[in-house]
Length: 240
Image (cartoon, rainbow, N blue to C red; front, side):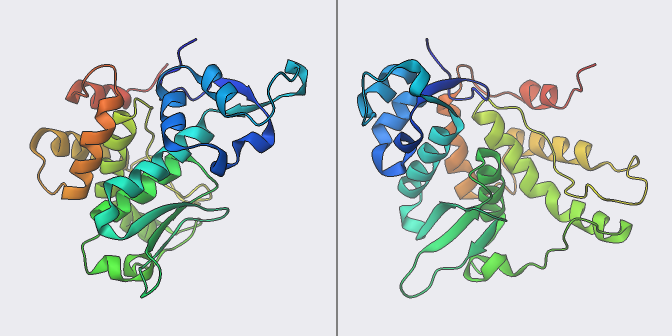
């Protein structure tokens, strides 16, 4: 059974304690993502020859996240920045004299990692010297004016996130991040704005940072077919 990198629903049997990141080297994780999940897990499992009923089912996402953390560190070793799986809300910590900068993403979610990386790609060198890039964040429950401001500043990073997500051959959805809005949101053009910006990024490369281009060049290697503008637009078509 061959599992593509993008599989969101594919699972394979593995003991819960086998998912310890210390057990999964980057080469094995990469193979698990792109070649054949079951043999690779068998080769790194601490406990072989266990009955199938003794195994728990763990999402491939855990290995995808491990793969991304490891390769991000390699691709951006010159940036003194690492990707960190967080247990709570995402946050960015600027580098100190003793620690690299940390992009902390939420709850081990692959999508959250790409979202936070996108913000990092958008931030200039000066903002990367500041915790959370020096931005103020209004939590869920924003009023209409705050939501409009949020959507304006999110168009560029979410357009980058769209490209990174599609490069991994995963579906992308915009995040308005305001589930408890008490006003009419039907007139928002945010989704269309993100789509249009993603297409412009892909077609022209204008305003697309060097780091975003590096990520795209690496991640698109995982796709079975090249990413196109059609793929970007098609992603936003709602299924009936």
